[in-house]
Image (cartoon, rainbow, N blue to C red):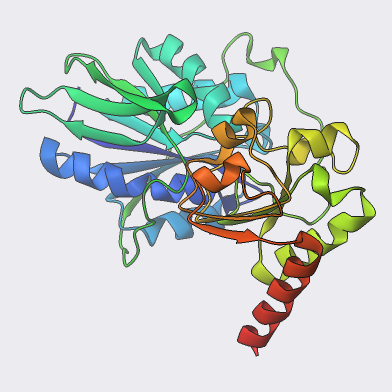
Length: 327
């Protein structure tokens, strides 16, 4: 096993997931302490754009596994491809974004390579003894725990999005292509089409800014206020479980314990009281703005900025102000 750090770069249609690039930052820190290199792995088909984007983060080496069979994500095929790269690199640590793909792929690769696994990591470091020390949240973010992995086996960690910044200013990474060799059983699952819900609106798990509405929106038509603000902020639209259950928005936009966990740089909660299940899914946001008429709403306990007023008056004003600032 080498001291290299391997970054699995998630991409779809040659577009890199922002969380994957953010993994390079802790990867560089670990590589410096371990005395190794940062190696990026990109799996897919026609991935020149993704490769160029990764090179700009300053990784030392890029290994691509490009094949028409890998055009769309398949858990079994991607598992085989990433395991092959791990066998070639023999990395000390493998990092990937804690996305739906990361959560699906990481345990499969860990089983195939007999690696240790930690998910939803927010801190990681190498101890003086060479052990990997990671920190991950527990109890819906109310507590954290330290987990240490021995240095005699590889470790895989999925990193929570927006925990680390994206590095820039790199170039000149060595490139290498590894052929994809299918294994028996990889074709048990065939992805024919990936259906996207929500049209052109960003997914909440990939956005730096999220504007969410709650039951106080009253109906689906009123969500146009949320969409207008989100459009001007280049943000995703989210919703509470109550709003989704009422049919105001599809459950694909639900934020919370039973929906999607998000960690954007800015989260604007409009008419959301702050049920514990909802706050569990968004309390990791960098900055939280809450708009609610109820001064006792639990959401104000975790909000960085609170506006006690009618959202139907405040949200249009915010939209107008954003437009003014944009000129």
